[in-house]
Amino acid sequence: MRRKLIAGNWKMNGSLAANGNLLASIKAGLPGSACDVAVCVPAVYLAQTQSELSGSKIAWGGQDVSAHESGAYTGEVSATMLRDVGCRYVIVGHSERRSYHNESDEVVARKALRAAASGLTPIICVGESLEERESGETDEVVARQIDAVLAVMDEESLKGVVVAYEPVWAIGTGKTATPQMAQDVHAFLRQRLGAKSVVAGEKVRILYGGSMKPDNAKELLSMPDIDGGLIGGASLKASDFLAIVNAA
Ligand code: 13P
Image 1 (cartoon, rainbow, N blue to C red):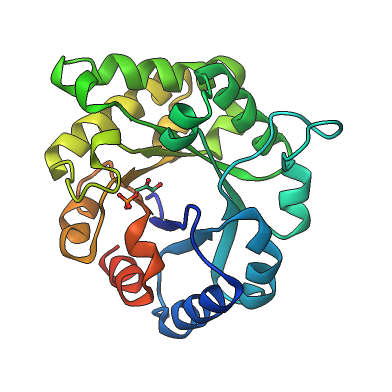
Image 2: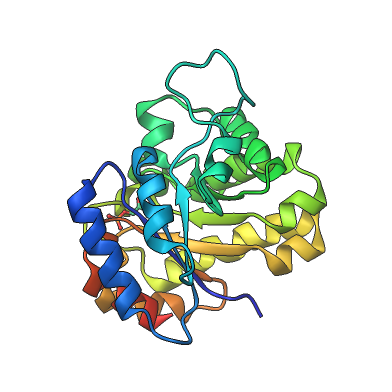
């Protein structure tokens, strides 16, 4: 059985004061037998998150990582640095980075590889735009995105990654994929992973992201290939985030 993972993606939100409250409330409200829980916070707040969450059951992670190891890459954060502040996870290839920072499938794959090589668990995001869905290209798009990762990763690294299916049209819009729509893409992605490595096909957790909220989480999380959620807006409110954790 794959253990469910609920990960918050705070995106570019927060402040020292607000984060302190949010993290304390999540920590205090976390149910005893929770699934795996993580928060992915802006890089400048990772040290704060580490000091707030050390010793708790909640893991933390970054929202992006450099494809390079170290050196003259102004503004970038390396996988080793993320490890240094205790990160377990890092999001790579979020659609906001693919579209606003022109990250190609190849760059995303290199980032995922660098993260895995440094001992981080990459949360690799894939997903189609509205236009792509409406023209029937969903499978083709997510296949291209995941295949770039499969091309560079060996079986050993692949087993440890997390994939997040985030249809772009559902992100921050309040529109959610129906559980069946999401399940179909998750099953397709699992089959793709399984074709490269049977073990990866069975082990890799595939999260759903895109307007997952307390009122739709249970239905989505009950689908056989939906192994958790990557939560944007609802991860900024402790009660909503905890309600989703409780639904997992
Ligand atoms: P929302 O939950 O705000 O739609 O964001 C989803 C997302 O992009 C998580 O990475």
